[in-house]
Image 1: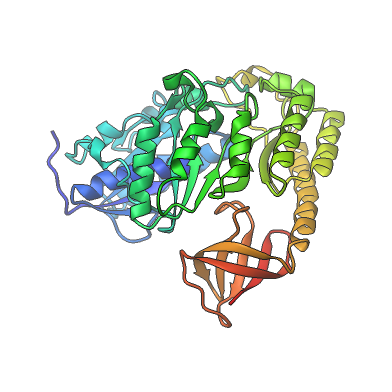
Image 2: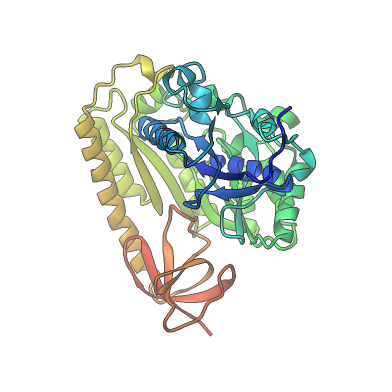
Length: 435
């Protein structure tokens, strides 16, 4: 057993998605509870660095490697004592990384938190569920409802990295939400690799709807936001619950990836254009003001110019509220990795730009329509001369921001306020506090 030395300062660097943020927060909570001083993405001096890596696509993997190498350089310069690496990259390349970057003191995979904590003479405490150290502003928090994924999308390495889908119980999630609310959290952002699969493994049926109905009863929680809802097999009852429950944001992050049937089939998505469009119609009919965020992949093997033009036209017609687009990354040990990566990299980047140009205009038009209207907003931070907030239709980091002139009005951070929109750009709204 290692000897506990709580004089050591620990800096955790988190790369990748919100699921990694959640994992880092749990590590921080365990260490802090055991007397360690823990920082997150800090520039302040530390004795030990833990890098929570991403291993999803090429750019994310490169960022992780560069961050590891920078930490190794600091270690060699005597600025830090130890470097530990955890997360998706070290899980995916657990056999290669120790040989290629042996200067790292220890590598841990995605399910190795217990072993990581033992390096600090700490035993994992289950009773600390919900006691994690938040790295987000104190009024919102991510709530990971399941781990892993049972889908077989051809381009995705997540099932290989994170394993099979494992749901948490409704009781444990309500307990964690209750503890978060007691700390001042007002907004829960539900995350998983696939929200809509929730419950099948432990209850024998999809129970996202039951979970939502339990979470909205937690006192102090005012917004519940849904991220990463897989379209195939989408539970129809969830649509009705979004429409009926005031606390559930009229917002849905539903990655659709493409619209051409040949591409969708090759991607092994389990849905075609007709099913996709039918789901979107159902959502918009049930929740007239729903904000739908999606992500797309361009440059997938076999995406001809004709198939890309079909995607462009569909984006123009469908008019998503929020949209992100990725250039296809050819990943080894995936089903698509066996295909020929036949779209030139420059063409991929050009297609990214074309889709985002379309979306920028759509976003601008939709934001212009908000001018003169009043929205309930929550304010995350102050930046320069502006308070930065969000409507229920916007998730932090990725969506619209509402800016209020801090030289003219005072707004309390972490609180809700009624804001009248005065002006708008493609991705920013400008407003004033309604007194």
